[in-house]
Length: 171
Image (cartoon, rainbow, N blue to C red; front, side):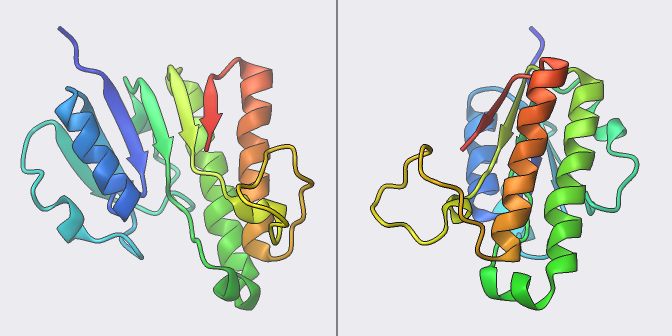
C-alpha cells in the first residue's frame, strides 16, 4: 500500500510540528520545508524515522521546490512571517516571504498535481474585529503589511483553484 505524501511548509513551527506528528500517526510520509527563522529543530527532534524528511530551505528563494513536491498528495502551507509590527518596519521582507513564497509553493503544487492544498490564512485580513468570532462574510480591512500579504496569498490560492481546478482549503 502506497503511503500518502504530504508537504508541510513551516513544519518546524508549533502548528507544523504537531501536524507532522498527526500525519505520521495516520500513516503519511512527510516532507518538511522550513527556513528555521521561527521554527525550531527541537520541535521535530523525535522524528528520526524514514517517513519524515526535513529540509532547510527558504521557499521565497528556492527555485527548486519541484524536487520536494514530486509525488506529493497534499500540501499544508503554513510557512509565513506572522507579526504585525515587524511587517510595518520591513514590508518588503513580508511581501517576499508571504507572497512570493506562497506563489512558488502553489506553482510547485500545481505542477505536482496535488490532491489538496491547505493554506494557513489570517484573520488579520478583517482588521480589528467588531465581534468574535470573525465571520468570513465580514468586510476585508487590510490595516498593515502583514494582513495585505496574507490576503494576497489567499487570493493567489483561490485563483489557482479556479483556473487550474486545484482543490484547496484556507483556514
